[in-house]
Each structure stands twice: as structure tokens, then as C-alpha cells.
Image 1 (cartoon, rainbow, N blue to C red):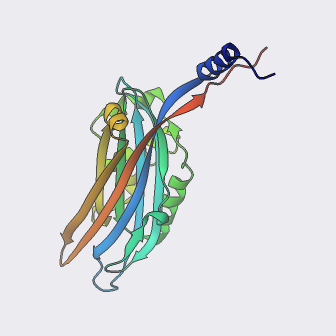
Image 2 (image 1 turned 180 degrees about the vertical axis):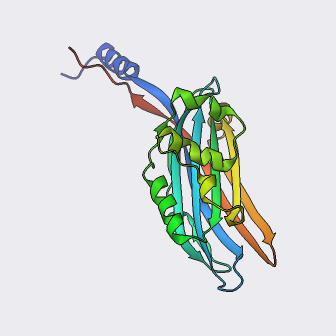
Length: 227
């Protein structure tokens, strides 16, 4: 005999009550184009990229960091790197909190050092919880490189990305902030970036775009095991 309507209502009520809603935000690099290269002799730039998402709660305290990385890759003038070349990252967005997306594009001079840097970042692809001791510091106006170092510091790695790079190596860096209300009202946020400058007699020009996608999902609550 099929269950009666009241029984079904009780079943779905219990199912819903055992779940909670959570908003997740992902960062997806959509495109990188090498319009003009910095390297004039070899006509190739060796590139690496590091990017992160840092989430803050409603009180403005950092709670978690997630990392992505790309490279080391040779780029030629006019070359386009599509979405499939980059891994996406994702992090929970606390209710009434915010997300800070950070990115740095680097032209590699020291290949061995850059490989060590990427290896360090790739150990922490899943998001890292930020300890209370660092939560307050993270809400200060940090540079993109400081944001990128935050999670590794939280993981106990004592790693500062800015210390590993010469200022001339950085082709571009950027931070963008996404609040909870905006994420819910506009689940897709496209961020276009232009990194363009001159170093001595050489110049460079890179066009980059990424998207922040937010979605609210049902997450099953964990129940404590009976003692």
C-alpha cells in the first residue's frame, strides 16, 4: 500500500530539517591572451599564475582560503590559453560575509625557484581554515601577494610569496571583493583584467578574464554518533 499523504509530509519535513543551506563560490579562469610579450630576445615569456579565494564571516573575520595555480608555461605573442587549461577553485561563502578573489601573473626568471613555489601552493588546493590568530589580520587592506600568502601561513608553512619574487617579475596582480548579497542576487560575476606596462626598453600586454560563480546548495547536517 502506498504511503498516505500525512506520512509523506512527515518524511519530507524530516529530510529538509536534516539539511542546511550553504552558499559556495567558485573562481574560474576563463581566458588568458598574450597580446604583447615582455621578453624581446627569445620572443617567449615563461608564465606562472597563482590565485585564491578568501572568505570572511559577517563580523569581517577571515575563515578560510582556497588556492589555484597554473604554469610554468611558455607563451608566444598572440597565444590564447582557454578555460580548460586552468583548474577552478571553490570555497563556502558565509551568510552576510564576503569573498576576496586574488590573482597574480608572473614572468618566471628563476625556473627552479618557481617550481618550488608552485609545488608549495599545489599542496593546498582544498580550502584551509584560517586560525583565530590570523583572522583579524586578514581584514586589513592586504596586497594581492599578501592574500596569496595568507592561507599558507594559516597552514603553518611560513611562506611569503612576495619574498620569492622580484618586483619586475610581476606582470599583474589584482584583488576583487564579492559580498554575500551581491553573490545571491547575481550568481555570475565576470571580471576582465588588463595587465599592461613597460620595463626598460620592453613592454608587455596581457588580457585575462575570470568568473566568480555562486550557488546555494543543500548540505546534510552531520549527526553525532551515539555514545
